[in-house]
Length: 202
Image (cartoon, helix red, strand yellow):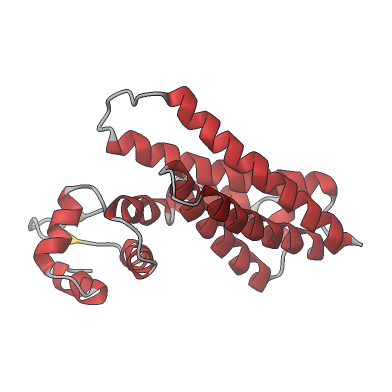
């Protein structure tokens, strides 16, 4: 997409879009003539983030995370998984949305929200939905755990990638604390995921 097309879809001034691109908040490509181009996928991801009222920092994360698995081969890895093949197309799409929601909630959790209990409650709700989808697909317990690990790793890798990008190559402060926060978040949602999976299987 051209600058004009992308800025029109986002309903922002082209100068603002250029500012976001220069700041790394959305990927940009250059034609042989030196003109900026944007991926429609990235523009749509940023549009969703903006419509959710997220900060520019979260916009950056969600925009870059969308399609990351595809660009790095994760999409191909997922398609080859037994748990993915067992899901109906509509369940796969709902699962993708849940992963996106969990990513957004994890970022909110890491930012220290005013009401952390509410963020975790929303995350547990999303995890229950993912567990329900796994149970309805008839997954074995082993495949359900493998599905959870894949989802967790996809989300965590996106967060780590964005944190590293934001630090511009510098070693971020308190990485141990960062990973403890991430681990605590996913410990919480794992219980909800497994509970819903078991309920859906009965």
